[in-house]
Image (tube, rainbow, N blue to C red):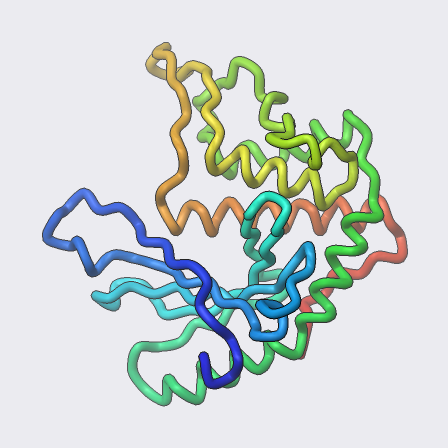
Length: 231
């Protein structure tokens, strides 16, 4: 991947309950293109490599966006740019190069999509509809939140905006890290949510939120098109 001018910028590993699997767990590496590293913009397209040392998970390459204002990394929905599932066996090197080249080619299209999201304004009712559509990504049906709209609260003053892209980032950041309280309707017990540490759940939430944002963009802007981006 480095040979194609993409350089690793961060590594995340899943936690393990079985200590015998420590060192073999699922992990993903985020890469940025050399041109973006030397001249970073507000939003940078990333290449995401998801893998596990014990081969229990498919080796895959997806596309993401890094937002420098909040050090926040989004993951693009498969409906926008399909992730590449690469077998651990076979002609892996050529498969990886092909995937990397395709992501390199579609970088401008993804940044155009972000600009479109930034041009779409949401009112409070629309923000709350976005939130309600997204809640099942994070909380099972039997969990009732005390105040779900607190998940729409920006964590920094720069995010006090009403555009679709900012709201998407607010929800993503709060879904993954914020602690919210509620009760379990089945057990009647209180709970406080914890930070997401599962890589699979992180990816699921990210892609799900982006998918909902795509649907909102289609509704709000008749000229918006969101087909699968092809390189």
